[in-house]
Length: 176
Image 1 (tube, rainbow, N blue to C red):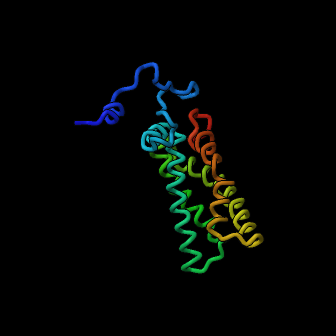
Image 2: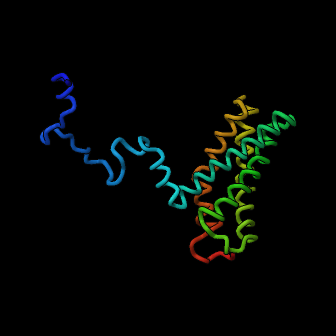
Image 3: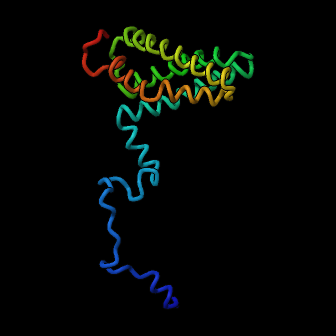
Protein backbone atom coordinates (compact mmCIF):
# COMPACT_ATOMS: atom_id res chain seq x y z
CA UNK A 1 0.00 0.00 0.00
CA UNK A 2 1.44 3.41 -1.00
CA UNK A 3 2.44 5.79 1.74
CA UNK A 4 0.55 9.08 2.16
CA UNK A 5 3.55 10.98 0.69
CA UNK A 6 3.53 8.77 -2.43
CA UNK A 7 -0.24 9.24 -2.87
CA UNK A 8 0.18 13.03 -2.58
CA UNK A 9 2.99 13.05 -5.14
CA UNK A 10 0.94 11.04 -7.63
CA UNK A 11 -2.21 13.13 -7.24
CA UNK A 12 -2.89 15.73 -9.94
CA UNK A 13 -2.49 19.37 -9.01
CA UNK A 14 -5.68 21.42 -8.64
CA UNK A 15 -6.29 23.76 -11.56
CA UNK A 16 -5.54 26.76 -9.36
CA UNK A 17 -1.95 25.49 -8.99
CA UNK A 18 -1.34 24.87 -12.70
CA UNK A 19 1.48 26.89 -14.21
CA UNK A 20 0.58 28.82 -17.35
CA UNK A 21 3.01 29.00 -20.26
CA UNK A 22 4.92 32.27 -20.45
CA UNK A 23 3.20 34.81 -22.73
CA UNK A 24 6.26 35.01 -25.00
CA UNK A 25 6.03 31.33 -26.05
CA UNK A 26 5.23 30.85 -29.73
CA UNK A 27 2.24 28.67 -30.57
CA UNK A 28 3.40 25.27 -31.73
CA UNK A 29 6.84 25.62 -30.16
CA UNK A 30 7.35 23.14 -27.35
CA UNK A 31 7.70 24.65 -23.87
CA UNK A 32 11.31 25.24 -23.01
CA UNK A 33 12.30 26.33 -26.50
CA UNK A 34 13.44 24.75 -29.71
CA UNK A 35 16.49 22.99 -28.28
CA UNK A 36 14.41 20.90 -25.92
CA UNK A 37 13.05 18.88 -28.87
CA UNK A 38 15.89 18.94 -31.43
CA UNK A 39 14.41 16.37 -33.82
CA UNK A 40 11.12 18.25 -34.02
CA UNK A 41 13.03 21.48 -34.57
CA UNK A 42 15.19 19.91 -37.28
CA UNK A 43 12.08 18.51 -38.96
CA UNK A 44 10.55 21.98 -39.11
CA UNK A 45 13.77 23.54 -40.37
CA UNK A 46 14.21 21.21 -43.33
CA UNK A 47 10.73 21.96 -44.66
CA UNK A 48 11.96 25.38 -45.81
CA UNK A 49 14.59 26.10 -48.48
CA UNK A 50 16.71 28.13 -46.05
CA UNK A 51 16.81 25.31 -43.50
CA UNK A 52 17.68 22.72 -46.12
CA UNK A 53 20.31 24.96 -47.64
CA UNK A 54 21.87 25.52 -44.22
CA UNK A 55 21.89 21.77 -43.56
CA UNK A 56 23.53 21.15 -46.95
CA UNK A 57 26.07 23.84 -46.14
CA UNK A 58 27.02 21.83 -43.06
CA UNK A 59 27.35 18.64 -45.10
CA UNK A 60 29.47 20.52 -47.63
CA UNK A 61 31.69 21.85 -44.86
CA UNK A 62 32.48 18.26 -43.85
CA UNK A 63 33.64 17.51 -47.41
CA UNK A 64 35.51 20.81 -47.55
CA UNK A 65 37.34 20.25 -44.26
CA UNK A 66 38.16 16.62 -45.12
CA UNK A 67 39.88 17.75 -48.31
CA UNK A 68 41.80 20.50 -46.51
CA UNK A 69 42.96 18.18 -43.74
CA UNK A 70 44.00 15.52 -46.26
CA UNK A 71 45.95 18.03 -48.35
CA UNK A 72 47.70 19.59 -45.34
CA UNK A 73 48.37 16.42 -43.33
CA UNK A 74 49.03 13.88 -46.10
CA UNK A 75 50.38 15.96 -48.99
CA UNK A 76 51.93 18.77 -46.89
CA UNK A 77 50.14 21.63 -48.68
CA UNK A 78 50.19 25.09 -47.17
CA UNK A 79 46.79 25.66 -45.46
CA UNK A 80 46.23 28.85 -47.49
CA UNK A 81 46.65 26.82 -50.69
CA UNK A 82 44.57 23.88 -49.46
CA UNK A 83 41.68 26.07 -48.26
CA UNK A 84 40.43 27.19 -51.72
CA UNK A 85 40.68 23.61 -53.03
CA UNK A 86 38.51 22.46 -50.12
CA UNK A 87 36.13 25.34 -50.81
CA UNK A 88 35.67 24.25 -54.42
CA UNK A 89 35.02 20.60 -53.46
CA UNK A 90 32.56 21.67 -50.76
CA UNK A 91 30.97 24.13 -53.16
CA UNK A 92 30.37 21.44 -55.77
CA UNK A 93 28.65 19.28 -53.16
CA UNK A 94 26.67 22.28 -51.90
CA UNK A 95 25.58 23.37 -55.40
CA UNK A 96 24.41 19.87 -56.32
CA UNK A 97 22.46 19.25 -53.10
CA UNK A 98 20.83 22.68 -53.18
CA UNK A 99 19.93 22.42 -56.87
CA UNK A 100 18.28 19.05 -56.47
CA UNK A 101 16.68 19.24 -53.03
CA UNK A 102 16.53 22.68 -51.39
CA UNK A 103 15.46 24.70 -54.44
CA UNK A 104 14.20 21.80 -56.55
CA UNK A 105 15.44 23.54 -59.66
CA UNK A 106 16.68 20.62 -61.72
CA UNK A 107 14.71 21.95 -64.69
CA UNK A 108 16.76 25.18 -64.78
CA UNK A 109 19.67 25.47 -67.19
CA UNK A 110 22.47 23.89 -65.17
CA UNK A 111 25.32 25.55 -67.10
CA UNK A 112 24.01 29.09 -66.48
CA UNK A 113 23.31 28.26 -62.83
CA UNK A 114 26.75 26.72 -62.40
CA UNK A 115 28.49 29.67 -64.06
CA UNK A 116 26.75 32.17 -61.77
CA UNK A 117 27.65 30.02 -58.78
CA UNK A 118 31.24 29.55 -60.00
CA UNK A 119 31.81 33.28 -60.33
CA UNK A 120 30.54 33.95 -56.83
CA UNK A 121 32.53 30.99 -55.44
CA UNK A 122 35.77 32.23 -57.02
CA UNK A 123 35.35 35.59 -55.34
CA UNK A 124 34.36 33.99 -52.03
CA UNK A 125 37.27 31.51 -52.20
CA UNK A 126 39.75 34.34 -52.73
CA UNK A 127 38.41 36.21 -49.70
CA UNK A 128 38.32 32.93 -47.75
CA UNK A 129 41.95 32.10 -48.62
CA UNK A 130 42.99 35.59 -47.55
CA UNK A 131 41.29 35.15 -44.18
CA UNK A 132 42.90 31.70 -43.69
CA UNK A 133 46.32 33.13 -44.63
CA UNK A 134 45.93 36.08 -42.29
CA UNK A 135 44.81 33.98 -39.33
CA UNK A 136 47.21 31.05 -39.89
CA UNK A 137 50.41 32.68 -41.13
CA UNK A 138 50.21 36.11 -39.53
CA UNK A 139 48.38 35.42 -36.26
CA UNK A 140 49.56 31.77 -35.88
CA UNK A 141 46.07 30.38 -35.33
CA UNK A 142 45.79 26.60 -35.86
CA UNK A 143 44.71 26.08 -39.48
CA UNK A 144 41.52 24.14 -38.68
CA UNK A 145 40.35 26.98 -36.42
CA UNK A 146 41.35 29.50 -39.10
CA UNK A 147 39.37 27.53 -41.66
CA UNK A 148 36.23 27.46 -39.50
CA UNK A 149 36.53 31.16 -38.73
CA UNK A 150 36.88 31.94 -42.44
CA UNK A 151 33.90 29.68 -43.24
CA UNK A 152 31.74 31.59 -40.77
CA UNK A 153 32.93 35.01 -41.90
CA UNK A 154 32.67 34.36 -45.64
CA UNK A 155 29.96 31.76 -46.15
CA UNK A 156 27.36 32.07 -43.40
CA UNK A 157 24.37 33.94 -44.75
CA UNK A 158 26.14 34.76 -47.97
CA UNK A 159 25.43 31.37 -49.49
CA UNK A 160 21.73 31.61 -48.64
CA UNK A 161 21.45 34.95 -50.40
CA UNK A 162 23.61 33.73 -53.26
CA UNK A 163 21.45 30.66 -53.87
CA UNK A 164 18.05 32.33 -53.52
CA UNK A 165 18.66 35.53 -55.46
CA UNK A 166 21.43 34.77 -57.93
CA UNK A 167 21.82 31.07 -58.65
CA UNK A 168 18.23 29.81 -58.20
CA UNK A 169 16.06 32.93 -58.30
CA UNK A 170 12.31 32.47 -57.91
CA UNK A 171 11.66 34.86 -60.78
CA UNK A 172 12.99 34.09 -64.20
CA UNK A 173 14.80 37.41 -64.56
CA UNK A 174 18.15 35.76 -65.00
CA UNK A 175 18.97 33.43 -67.91
CA UNK A 176 18.72 29.78 -67.05
